[in-house]
Length: 222
Ligand SMILES: Cc1cc2nc3c(=O)[nH]c(=O)nc-3n(C[C@H](O)[C@H](O)[C@H](O)COP(=O)(O)O)c2cc1C
Image 1 (cartoon, rainbow, N blue to C red):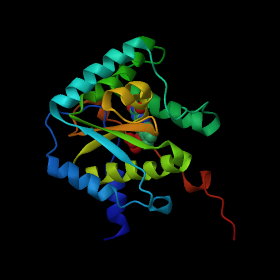
Image 2: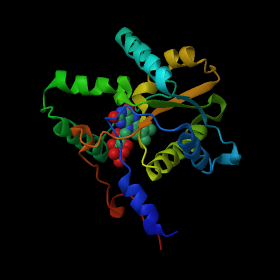
Image 3: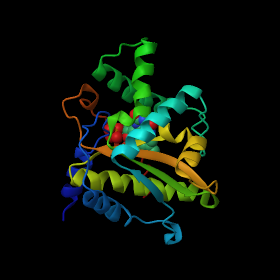
C-alpha cells in the first residue's frame, strides 16, 4: 500500500448529486460499513449508529421526507453554522456556483437554485440512504468521531465504485427523522449519506471542487 493509492482514492471521490436506480448489493454495503468502522474515536467509543435504507424503504422515506419538507419543520439536532465569513464564505460560494453552473442555473435564478437544493430531499434519486447519529451525551466529540466515520464510509464506497454524498440538509429535519426511524431523543442525528452508483453523464456530477494550498491552513513552528 502506498500513499499514492490513498491519494488516488481521495482524488476519485466526489459528492455525487445524481444516482442511477440500480441497488448496491447488501454484501458490498456491509463491506463499506465494516471498513469505515476502523476509524479512530475518542476512548474507542465508536459513537456512530446507522439506519440504512434500500429498495422500497428508500422510496417510502424519500416520499415522506419530501412531504415533510413542504411542512417546513426543519430543526437540526446539531446547530447549523451561524455564518460563513472570509475564506469560508468564498469557498462556500465557489462550490455552490460550480454546481449551479454545471446544471445550468444562472446567478440570480432563485427558483432554479431552490429547485436544485430541493433535490437534496429526493436524495438525488439514490437507491440507498444511511442516517448517521451519535449519542447526545458525547456532544461535539461524538460528532467529530462520526465525521471520521462518514469520510471513511465515502472512501470505502469509492473503492468499490459506489458513489456517495453526505447530506446535512437531510439532518435538518431531525424531529421527523427521529419519529420516522424511531431514533431515540438521546441521539443527535448528524447527517445522511445517500449512496449508489453515479449517473456519470449527469451535469450535476460534472464538476469537481478545489482544495486550499497548505500555506492557507498550516502554521509551521520550527
Ligand atoms: C457533513 C457534510 C454535510 C454535507 N451536506 C451536504 C448537503 O446537505 N447537500 C449537498 O449537496 N452537499 C453536502 N455536502 C457535500 C459538500 O458540499 C462537499 O463535500 C464539498 O463541497 C466538497 O466537494 P466534494 O465532496 O465533491 O469533494 C456535505 C458534506 C459534508 C462532509
